Image 1 (tube, one colour):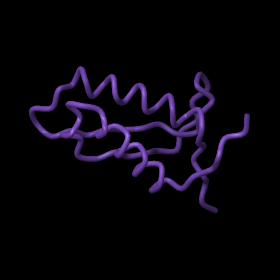
Image 2 (tube, rainbow, N blue to C red):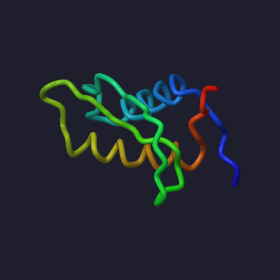
Image 3 (cartoon, helix red, strand yellow):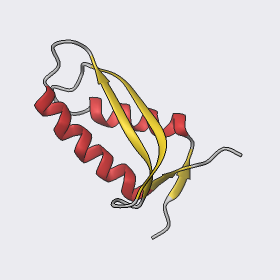
Image 4 (spheres, rainbow, N blue to C red):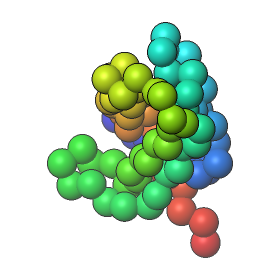
Length: 81
């Protein structure tokens, strides 16, 4: 299955919206996508998530894992040339 290439900013926005949609994940402050080849998942990006103090890390980790899996199955990071 071919993955849809997407711009870094769009992927960051999608990830932020999806993670914040999970209950208890409202304290996500930022999501950054970085170009990196991940041989195991076959993705060409990794995601960093930043939270505000007091965040429920167990809920956030679950949301990150689910969101990452969903987005990696559908999107590849478009390389800017």
